[in-house]
Length: 99
Image 1 (cartoon, one colour):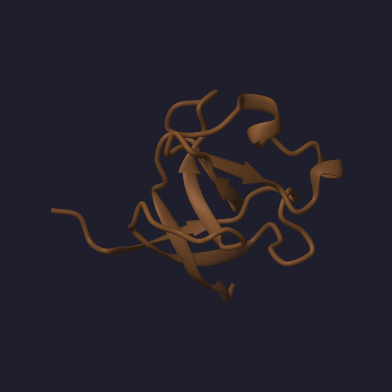
Image 2: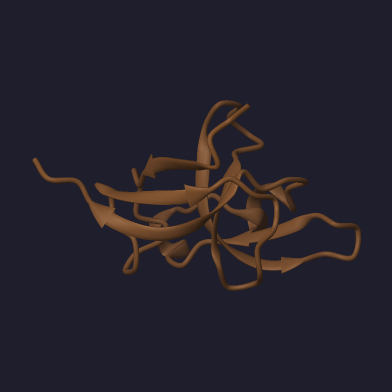
């Protein structure tokens, strides 16, 4: 059984200005989210790597379209790899880890 909450660190600039490298996110483990919410999904191109993206929409086939807030940062999102089948979780809040 997995804990319902987990945390991830933001590592890249694809979600700036709202999320920046070094921010930490508390995530609810769920496959449900509404368009516009920030979600976590596995990177289809790099197994084992998680992505932090905004849920654009749920498609009629049940897959999810993910978008970056800052695509000019060289972001990898559904425009590159297409829709994803599952979400790992929905971001509840952001915090800064103290040094």
